Image: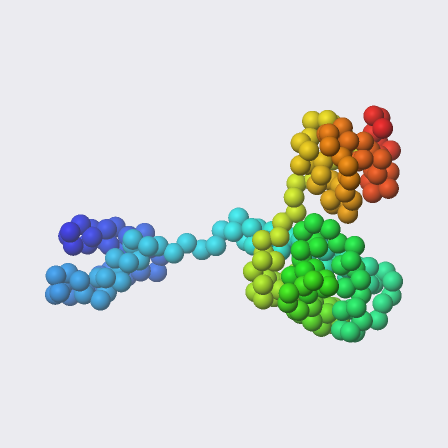
Amino acid sequence: MWATQGLAVALALSVLPGSRALRPGDCEGAGGRGPRCVAFLAAALNPTKPPTAGAKRAGAGATAVCISYLGRFYQDLKDRDVTFSPATIENELIKFCREARGKENRLCYYIGATDDAATKIINEVSKPLAHHIPVEKICEKLKKKDSQICELKYDKQIDLSTVDLKKLRVKELKKILDDWGETCKGCAEKSDYIRKINELMPKYAPKAASARTDL
């Protein structure tokens, strides 16, 4: 067995960068299980790979909701010339979150900007934002405080300007209404949900409504 593993070590050393040849005695004694021999064997059988570009992109995508939402919030504060103090930003974020829907509402819940929030880490947003710290850095710190923030990802968006509503499932139709903060009381048939969406589209998606020809 150790002879076979010794061969694996030798082969690994020929391709491992920065490695030196085994010296006499490295694998002598203890049945060929000397410290350097074991170390080289571990490196050969369990090589460590550097993070790939794909992994880095996945890491960025893990905070997409956080970066997008807080980025819009920050821009809104600038557009309205709001005073950048932690207390003011905290109050403004709570008000901003009242209009949040779907995954963005969950983000607000996780950072403590909703009335029913279980935890309060809103100061992890208000304090750095008051000093104009980039939202990317804020979100990186937030995900270390609450790993659930990493799991927030936007659902695939439906292009309401071109989609055939009749081909969507009822679940998808309900989601459109839910994203708008609306419900369809008394709706029993698929056609009821479609009618409700068409009725509300000019309010919530005016560009899509004007582009459609079946309304």
